[in-house]
Length: 248
Length: 248
DNA sequence: CTACCGTGAATGTCAGACATTTAATTGTAA
DNA sequence: TTACAATTAAATGTCTGACATTCACGGTAG
Image (tube, rainbow over all chains, first blue to last red; front, side, top):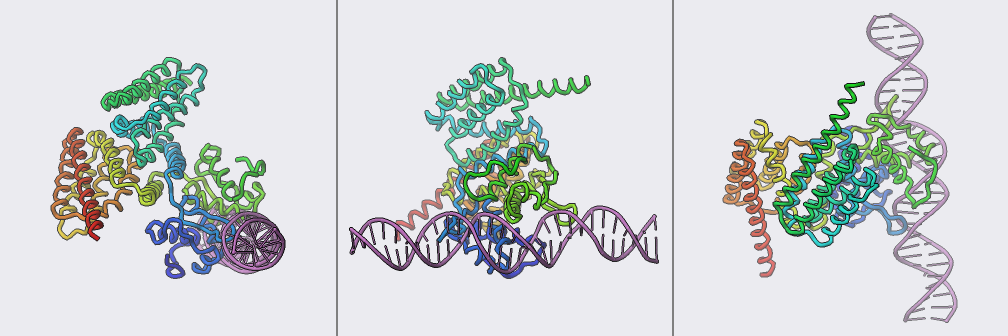
């Protein structure tokens, strides 16, 4: 963690300091749980004031790279980034990416189901009874009358996350969390009629059955059908919207 | 973007303020490119001092949710989060997750190839001549003598990213960037002999050929072989290490 | 009409101070 | 000697006020 030399570049000292420390963390110069120098010491080292150092530390804290403790023997510590911590960030980022970049429903849907199908064979091998139970419970909820569209979508997400978790690979679960959850706002634009809900529940049941039977091929084919049906539903909504637009 | 009411909870005002603004951005209360109130105004609204507001803003800037401009008519603006900006963050986070959580080579490898195989059928349909050319160029580089292991790995990553990009789905490219790039440090632990490089180049060629022929099945089977071979290599390394450990 | 120069508003930075939290130390009594 | 309570010190959290820097805007001179 060099310091005090070679500044220059453009302005924004706090960004430069954050980068220096971040590089030190990523390159393992600083180990997990190691304590950084105190804010005052860092200010000395980097030849800046404490507020500037603090801004840099907050940047790192926002990325969960460090955590801070107050009090004696407190300070900033290199954080062990856990999957649990990374999930919400991944989901927030993915959701914003989709909503801010005019990603079409089709593109997002394609990505999501391509990834889910990648999990299917592994899930067919490894799904636990717990995960199956979660899926069955969500299916049950989805069939309940009087469920709002939002609640239906939320249950849908929970179902699919159970499927992904069934692959028993935390790396996959992490990557997929973003793809699956980020779809929810897009799905919320669809109005689910009683008939379409029934069709989705049937396909979900097909998936759960296939996983219970450890049948990878059947799981895959059910996912393909579900993807086709989802896109069909979205198309219907889009067409209806275009039509009403033309009639204006 | 409510303020000044209902604080309490635990300490760390800057985190609370960051959360409030983040929520406003995520929920679309604040539009893209919309200007936030000035730091002084925010300090008034939230009843805190300007440094505290600044720390909150730096947190958001670290997540690329806002950008700031100096000078007259400057300020903090809601940022349009682009895929280009999100890539490096995703890669950094994924890399740290793998290196800090003792994710085994097998688990990471499984995830990576499962995801890549999800891209294969789409890439077989859509790969552009450009992407094919990139893959061929990287294959050529990988065959060059005197290439360091690191450079070989870097080229491997470039090859696989071209494959993923071939699917023509930015959402997939984004999600996979993390999985593919994060593997590089793990791959770097392997020493690639001339023979193993030859085998990998052959499989890469098989993949490129299959994509050129738009043959999804052949692409998939080549990827399966490549995964098997990669894991075999890693196993050899691991066994050699265990052996030398026992002999100590 | 154009080029130049204030002016003001905003962020970036600094210095110093005080508040709060918390572990470690010290002091005291059983 | 041990257990417990009070003190201390170090660190982060926060505030105030000031100054530096940047940059759009408008007015003025040529």
